[in-house]
Length: 216
Ligand code: URA
Image (cartoon, rainbow, N blue to C red; front, top):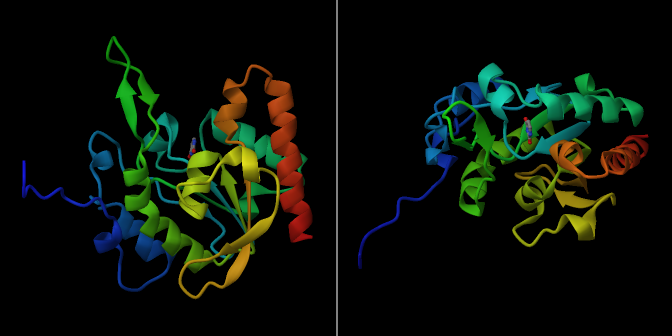
């Protein structure tokens, strides 16, 4: 209908004007910047070392992350922890977060199981202020994008994982965070879904080893 305004999706108005990660985590719990909060347990904000040299960015929380309120605590997180350890990285020393902070899902026929649904570009863009705030507050030396959705959040909608995977490239951090570096790799869930899981896992470990070497 002509003249009907579409309500913008934007987390921006929900961000606190000042404060560190804790203030942002608290404010994010009340984010209504897009409709994804409906039907979830709550916002899943990033977690980990607030002074980390390495930030890992996933897509969005899954079923277990939504229930427990923490990123990467389900099967993908277990695989990520194992791959990181093989690459020489301790996730306890990193900051781990997602491009989108609520679990987007559909309910399977039968009504019990919640099945992951990919966030749209509009939802990704709406949630971006939270990721920007986390990156500018943590100020890492390297940001690892896990999968194409995280890559789009960091490098824009034209990002293609196949073109960028495994290479350390410059990445301008938001605010006055300066130019640091970023690297994109497979999402651990893509490894779990892969027909050749062994090869996909080896690829993830190889890319994370590049990240580890970059940090020296
Ligand atoms: N997949 C993600 O991208 N993030 C999580 O936190 C869990 C699964």
